[in-house]
Length: 211
Image (cartoon, rainbow, N blue to C red):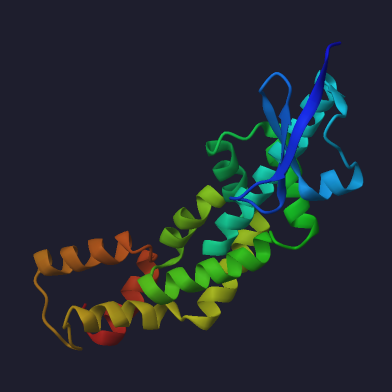
């Protein structure tokens, strides 16, 4: 297998933790700094194509981790979402899975922690019911057990009756308001779209004298 001679070594100006290796055939490859420190290369050294490929794989793994940390820098992510985003960025399955495993091991990814923050934000900001919240959670591929745990907890904190009442208040509906059939249907359709169960909606209707 043909070897290549290193003619220049420099640190990347854009990414300080990456080393750029220039070869005598005018090609270049990059090495993560931590990998370079463990196996220092010098100008004049020869490297095989197999070694270059190995360094390339290590660089790709570093790039996958860097992408993952940038995504986490914006907000928390579920395991499924991180896996999907890395694949969308063009990383191969092995690179994606090794990165996800690393993030889980280092506690940067935790579906329970993510789920608790996610459902709380959705219910607090959008005041949605459990059916809509389940739909919001679905893309994150959480286990049925974790999903039920999250729903039970969040609706202990945010009472569904109070959430429905907040929608009525926002729509300027007062207790004992006489709604015609068309108005009542429009209101019911709205609350169902918000993800509330019909029996909970009816309970509020009764307590407000809307039935």
